[in-house]
Image (cartoon, rainbow over all chains, first blue to last red; front, side, top):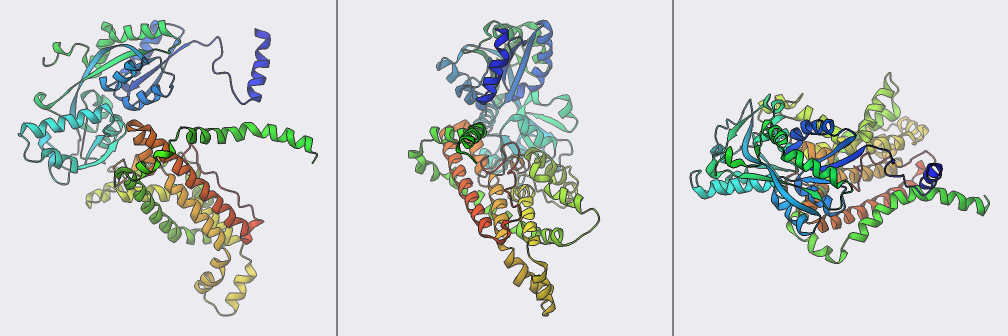
Length: 269
Length: 279
């Protein structure tokens, strides 16, 4: 086979295609993950690679809704970590993903720039006229959760009349990912943004503080993960899933502001 | 050239041609053009289309107003550091749009160079329609300036001198002689800049955000639609491809009939990262 390699290369160059992978490369696992998992995976990736020498994890981080579309259109994912079940369900149904399990939970908070020109002190302030609010696009998990939370606040009656309508009138941008929402607050373009608790990382905390959303009107976001059916690295994909669910993986998640797989221990029933 | 060698050359050209044409074919192949009508009439698409047309129109006028003196200056003046000014003007053409967006944020954003003072005055540019126009002007401006400059350079000096010696003021000379003679290049540059403005995506998303009716132009609508209804995204993309094709044809014919033909008026590279008009 070795002798033919140059010929293969020459032919593929001629017809304009390059061989995708050299045969002796390290085994690469492609992980599609929700943008909110950026920091967690940033730390988990090298830990996993160190535990399994000769493997390499490649990350594709974006809104789960976008990642689901990418997988549906043939994106080369081995494992998918989604920020909600809504984007995992259709993949399982279409037999593109297998046996999803929830590996983490998250809750929503309000992010406010430290200089706080708009003087935001509580969730109720989001409805004040002239507040520049940034939220995520409706299709994304965080965008859906955000609207759910605003709806709950509106329904409970403690936040004044037409709360939802007044808040939505303050929205200046529907960002494609939760990280973009945080960036807007960090850069001082928005007076407030709604994101996950886990998004207020040490780096972000330099410029941003968070305001809690009361449990009664908050949501607990469930994060499922699953192996993608057409993976060519099934064993490695399974190992990665086990790692995320292991006590070590769970510890890392908690360290990065998530609630672990069984939030009942740390959060409300 | 012998026909045989021609065939060989054609074969060698095929990979590059395929690289450009195949994705376009793929796009049209997936498009359900029959449902085109029902997409265009729905509110978000109409809003995005209207916003794209108005912002790019304003951008084109802005570029014409502020870009023409600069193009004229670069065409006729000789000064130290001209090459540096020249290079700076061309910079946005090859700059990744995301970098352009970042640069605009660092200038006009809440903590930006000018933004911090604007903020104190109660003015905030990011996340507004003004930001869309600024992003478009930044990215598309060079396309016009470059072309207009070449147009001005192609105007015979004797013509300008003659006009002046016959007593016409410089301004009158510009509007009655220089500009008309260079009009093809000016128009072609303006069309290219406008088309680039319509296609602006990266800088707009970063600097202006994504708000239907306010900052969500066509390319942003396509990006957003991908998550709710990929078919809409595909049909909108096809629309932009067709528009872009028309724009280039028009520009080419404008330049072809202009007197500036012999000068190398090649189409400037649209942009990197697919940020071109077909973004």
